[in-house]
Length: 342
Figure 1 (tube, helix red, strand yellow):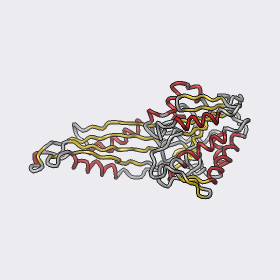
Figure 2 (cartoon, rainbow, N blue to C red; figure 1 turned 90 degrees about the vertical axis):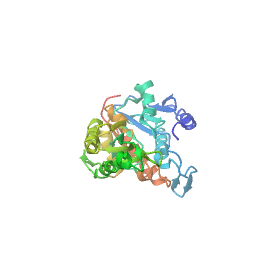
Figure 3 (cartoon, rainbow, N blue to C red; figure 1 turned 120 degrees about the vertical axis):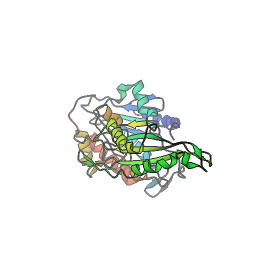
Figure 4 (cartoon, rainbow, N blue to C red; figure 1 turned 90 degrees about the horizontal axis):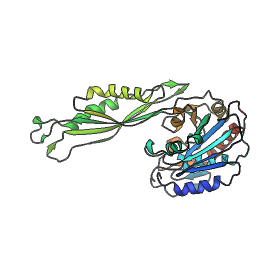
């Protein structure tokens, strides 16, 4: 799980250090292994080492060509492919293999940020592929995320005389109706259809059973498409909720993660779409494709495992998905591309 990656990082470090063609660096529980072949293009291949908490699936099991268990899809399958690709001694592109900690918790704790703070040079590249679960199909860019807490005020009173007070919990009804009525916006960006969502994921308020509550709150999460930035998304959210709010109420931004636009015009990503045998689709989630996009590096997601099974009790990955992901990435990494060393 997150913050418990040390033992796995030890094991991965030992495996990567066994390859003479790689320069291996460890920062905390994050590992970077790089080829230095002076190729014209450098490709980052990245995967996180942590998982979400178990949901009755902590013990893995294999049934035929299917591996079941916590993190099998998100994203130990992708990590396994990454480690297999690290064995290629003479790729046509220089490769940077990044295995990092704490992706599944608050973005501020991400191992990529820790790496960047210590050794930003290790993350420089022309293009990046995140081996997140995509069922061996390219999922372009990613959506952004806003998390806000809305606090509504009321007036405290005795429940026997509610007319002298105002129930803040009751006010949540209007707010939640506005969130539920947000709709299903599906913008097309770079030829990929994204699908926005707005969800209230937590509500709180009230105390003693004989007191009209004077405060109630809701945690609201907005997943927005890459046709807008975080500031624009916050403005959209503010406009939607403004009619439900009054003087004294609060809307507090708790977290913001930017989206990544699809950049499928990059030769590596074009080649990956072709090698996959499937058209690219939008990534309907947030991934660290956004980390690289923020830094001007085109990024996409491509890995084994059904993304709909990520974090699910029946999480699994198939041997066929592992093989298809590996074959496609080998085809791309062995194809010479024009460019400039990073």
